[in-house]
Structure formats: structure tokens, C-alpha cells
Image 1 (cartoon, rainbow, N blue to C red):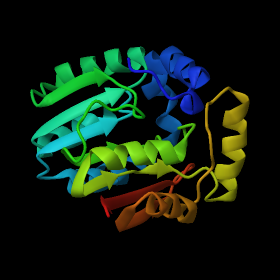
Image 2: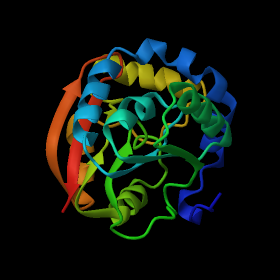
Image 3: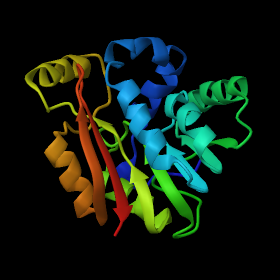
Length: 214
């Protein structure tokens, strides 16, 4: 795996996801209420894109939803155990157009402006260096390429804020608590033009944002 820049190193976060990979799907059922709508939006956005990168793919929930509507999908995660679970899910789904890789989103191997879309689902609240992460994703997108970034909003509602504090006590490696407004503002500040935004309700609402590279 490529090394993170020193400012973005997150060994605690990586260790958390390595430990939780096998039980991740079971542990997130409580948060699943907004997921069907999020997947619907992500599939619609990705439809017809020829070359798509997914970062922080985890166990492949989004991967298996969008793969049937795109040309080529490179699904990545920085935790080795997550990639193992991802490979099993992709293989069982028979998705021949998906390649699974362990990768660091700060040091992506792709050439500048080489991808039609990047999907970064439920990860922006976890990255140590948000500006660096968004800059890395923007770099690999072709002009007009699409960033699909649905993200849990840990500060959108009172209930979400309370749950977020409780999650923090368990060692959950969250880095920031977004509202729908602050999520959109961060993406726009990174050089993207938001073309679609929706807040999907749930215990942790999901802020769905699709944005083109400006």
C-alpha cells in the first residue's frame, strides 16, 4: 500500500476498520434506514460512466449496486480486511467489470484527469485531512467528471449529534461532524460544482452530494 502523507496518517482508523471488517455489515444495520435511497441516487448518478473509481468501498454495498450500470469499476479500500470482504462480495455477485484493490485515497495511482466518476460513500467524515482527500479525488477526475459523495451527517439533528458522541466512546474513528450545509460547503471549496444535493433522513441522516469537477 502506498504511504499516506504524514499529516494524513491515521493508523488508529485503519486498525479500527481492520478489526471490524468481518462484522461491519451486521454492525451497521441500525444505520440502514437512509441507505436504499442513497443507493438509488448513487446508481442514477453513476449510470453510463465508462471508468469509475470507488474509494472506501468497505464490504461492497455501494460497489455491487453501481457496478451493473458502469463500464469499468475499480473498487478500493485502505484496510486489507475490508478488501478481502469486498472481493468475496464481488465474486459472489459475478461482477466481471469490477477490480478490487487496496489503495490509499491520498496517493491514488491514476493519472490526472483519467476517470469519469469517483464514488466516495460515507468516508469524508472519517478522513484526517479533508482538503487533501478532496484534492486527491479531484485530481483524478476528468474535467466535468462527477464526484458522488453521500456522507453521514453527524451534526444534522439533535439525535444524530447524541449518537455521534456515543459512537465516539466506542473508539469509532470519526474526524468531523457534518451538517448538510457544511458538507456542501467543503465540497464546493475544493473546486467542485454541486449538481445535486439531498438529505436522506435516518438515525444518522445521509447528505447526498453529486458534484462535477469545476
